[in-house]
Length: 87
Image 1 (cartoon, rainbow, N blue to C red):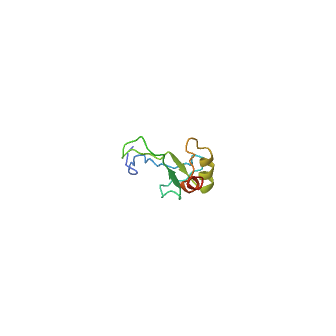
Image 2: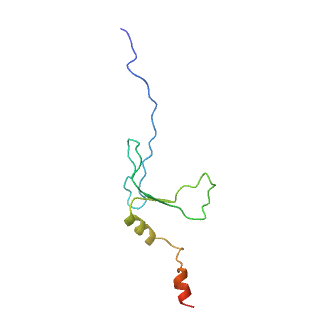
Image 3: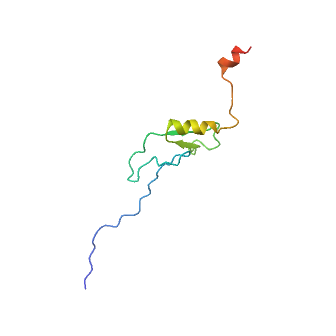
């Protein structure tokens, strides 16, 4: 019995698929294409170094952005225009 090589060995390929942090919907594609349009939010100041500033949140739509913003705490500020009108 003989043996033969039937094809090339291709090492496994890592594919990162983005997932919305609010609704957990997939944003990326399994075949490695460019991900669908999405939003990345970072909180400043970011504690990471310049090359290591991962986004705090990845969102897929305006609706998820609104849902995420409703749950934020500690960032409530009055706008400058409304603060000046109270003086």
